[in-house]
Image (tube, rainbow, N blue to C red):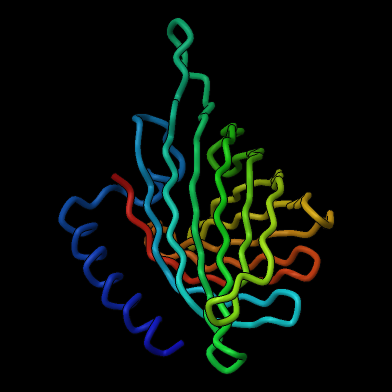
Length: 205
């Protein structure tokens, strides 16, 4: 895990330099809905599932399809987006085990005011577990989330109810903390026998 987070720290330093080069006002990225954009995240992850526990990395990309629908002369604060994420974890102490998960969702978010944003999203999820060179199981299903973003002077807090429907159906939650400048994110997911902790660095283009 130390190697993983060392790499993350180096990446964070690079992204921080990039962010300072074209710094935007605090909270602008969070509270304004202006132009199309792509948000990239990269980080380390720790996953527990069905007796497996391992560390690895995750990467995700969020594409804002439409930010700020314009109706005549007033702005409707709605955004439609698509999001792709991939994470993989490895545990070499348990017969060289690997777990990976791929997720593709579409969502809509509504800016209620300068402090709150509601969102719902749904999509496909695939999980794969291997031991050595042998694939032990693979699972396809659906994932649904509904939640809220709350902006404070220090952090953005994201809390969502999450439901996963595949071989088994489970409901749980996901909680995410993001720094005010949007650079760092810490998230925890707990749904059934699946738990995941992630620390990411983010960059918006």
